[in-house]
Image 1 (cartoon, rainbow, N blue to C red):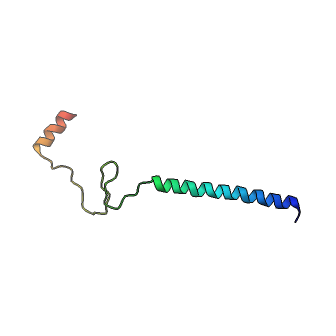
Image 2 (tube, rainbow, N blue to C red):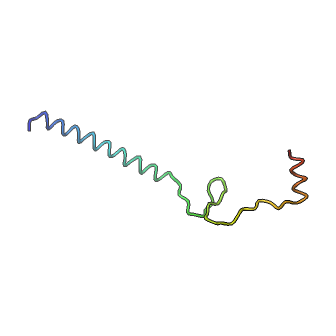
Image 3 (cartoon, rainbow, N blue to C red):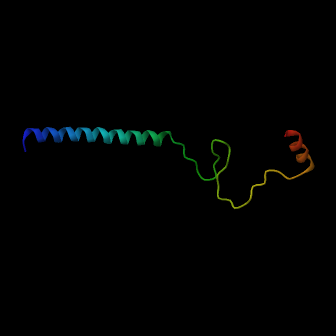
Length: 73
């Protein structure tokens, strides 16, 4: 092996080590800043995420709701 090949190898190793450090650092940053929620925990907008098979009923259709929707539109 001559001197030129050795220098090329060293330069390649330096570049690959820097690239690896950047990847590891960015993955660590993303992992530290990402919020993880357990299943069933409320998300940022107040919606609870779960696996319930029940249908969600937001309101009962009543005379008061009908009057509200007529006046709101």
